[in-house]
Image (cartoon, rainbow, N blue to C red):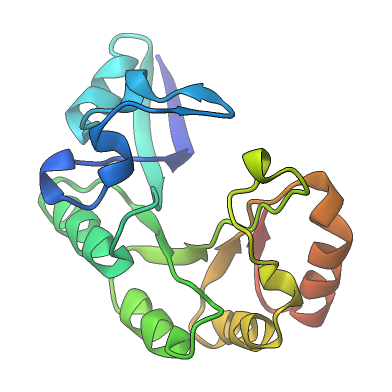
Length: 180
């Protein structure tokens, strides 16, 4: 049996009220979310490879919750009960004036290892995850630098045309580990 570490999973429980985007199936540029518009829990994840794959460890990456701290509380409670997820990449909006407070709060959870903020911009609004160019925002960049202070990595979701600016952000912040 193959033993694996899955570095990017999303566990969500619709009963928490944190994922309204999954409560009703909808269409987007990547197609229908109907197959995932339901709760997806640890038992299902661990059972998917039964007999073929042993999932030794997982890293849960934020799944667009309405409240990032509530999602982290939910995931940390799950980890405290079950041992999974061993790592949490939490959400935080680094452009906000309270970003440092959010980083402090997220870093206080035992299993939080990093932060993700989806940065995908696109000329065609259909493909844009956000209309704000966060990497061009001086407040975002100043708060990005705080990740090193709290020992947090950054999961950088973006499009290829954004890579030159991302490279500049990385060069300005050599003490922040970035996962692209």
